[in-house]
Amino acid sequence: MAGLVQLVVGVTRRMTGGQWLMIISGGISTLAGGSFIASAAAANPSLTNAAGYAIPGAIFFLIAAVRLGRAAKAN
Image (cartoon, rainbow, N blue to C red):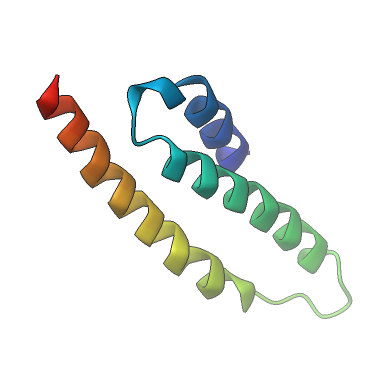
């Protein structure tokens, strides 16, 4: 749900600049959440996908924070 909210917020605020990373991150989070739900329902549930999800998400978040910080200073 958090990824879906992030995706919606990024799309609605895309004109402020730097939001494309939030849109990508929200989309990935939404897909990952669906994957985690499907994995949890499997016969042998595991969280091995979590690292593959967390690392790119952290990188996207850091880049978006830097870009949004620069955009805020420019205004």
